[in-house]
Length: 458
Image 1: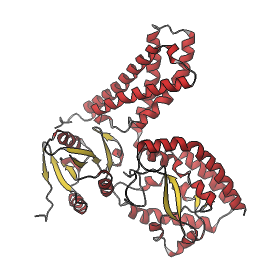
Image 2 (image 1 turned 120 degrees about the vertical axis):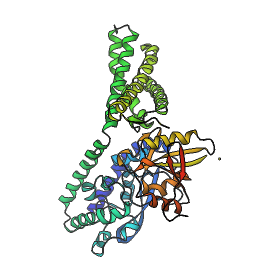
Image 3 (image 1 turned 90 degrees about the vertical axis):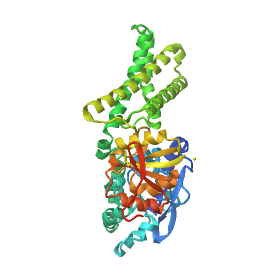
Image 4 (image 1 turned 180 degrees about the vertical axis):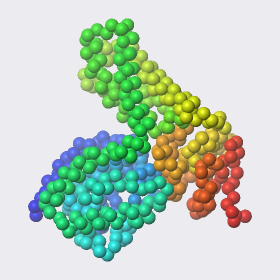
């Protein structure tokens, strides 16, 4: 009885926070992709009873289930907003509704998908004799479970063989030694894991260059507004305007960085910075500057009295700084780190396998074709550090394990494989996947393409 009272109390508090964040999260989800705001997934509850567990939707909507029940890092089904929600665990907040209904309890083993629950060994069936929990021991030890999948493995097989056994052991250990103080400790550790685990060491390492770009962009936002004010007043800023400038500087950063992130400023690898990225920065700074003006006005700061010319100068300076340092960084990278980089050489929707220099040449070659014309959806590559980055304006969407999902999501008709993709041992496997999905397969050789003929084909 006490446990149920605590569940209801915590559920009400959680739903209050959910109500506060709902308008903003819902808006961002709907802006990025079509589909509902919430997602109800089948989970196995107490006594093997199925129930709908609710989350914020983090994946693209598809006609029927596509792909595995598990979702490793780099899953192409996950949206940009979805990755952020998963990283911060805000996507789990709608489960407070399940907690209020009584489908779940506050502390307990996490609920499992039906197709994975059948793989539990007989000695682990006692896990399904209790209510699943909103918070459990595996959310602490395996806070960022999506990062536990090595590149190139079959996600479902790796989960069943490598991730599930220790999860089952932790759940059984918890159930057999469950105490009130132990639950209290799990609550404290769970809150800490949710807050501290949003940025892991691997996350920092894999995104070091992007984080550096964020830091430089912050400096550019501050410098452009300060320099615009200095130029507007010929180097002698009056005290009243100087006081106002100190108020505007943090507001400029807070208004602009979310826009930059949303428009994908930090998904482009510097070495592949291109004209499409220049246009994106031009549009993004214009949009962010407009938002800055509106938010300043709503905050009681009238920029018209501060000087309209400052807004124009600030926009010009910021655009120039963001484009300039990215172009300079690209030139330095090519000059010192890749001195031998060669010069690049009805619409069919295609994927390019190989997010490398030849992949870029392939994209540019296909872009020039008129008979037939091609609509290049994105790149495939086995390097997890390239996942979700932009190369020549295109995103790296996944690897061979994502081909079936991607072909459905983007209605892909052909796959082009580059010579530099490093896939000689995988070509036959790719061909079999594409044959099963009725996709054409071609090899890209600079300035030409040829059908792939696998040994044994006639």
